[in-house]
Length: 164
Image (cartoon, rainbow, N blue to C red):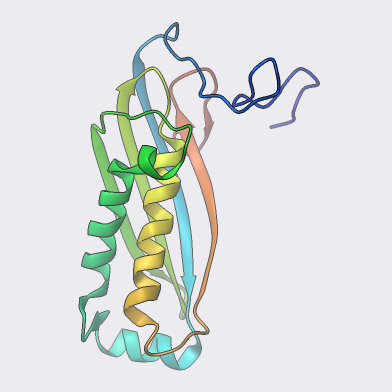
């Protein structure tokens, strides 16, 4: 999407100070967002994880990452200063191999509210990725996280990407 000359940062008040966006006049609509984060392993580590079916001494890596990501979605407003507390109507985290050495984590979040859930989806995907790292770091510190990115959103003023 090309930015117009009239677009501006939304979390700055008229005096240039940080401020939470006032959403009180916005319509309540169904909203959804999907984000992803990748976890890339060294070749030997990826092989070891495949052989163990993504299980570690700490437990199931995928299962733990899904729980952590879901918990993070619900607490996004506690982590990011200007995020509104939102009722989460749905959260789905999918984790699958993407190629030989990379896990792809996708987080989709839904709400019916006055503001969207992009930050919740990004938070869920990245915290799930950090959890994978935490559970695998004993094997290597050369694990790489990212990129993390918004794949799409719908509801509100502008739809974007995958969730249109």
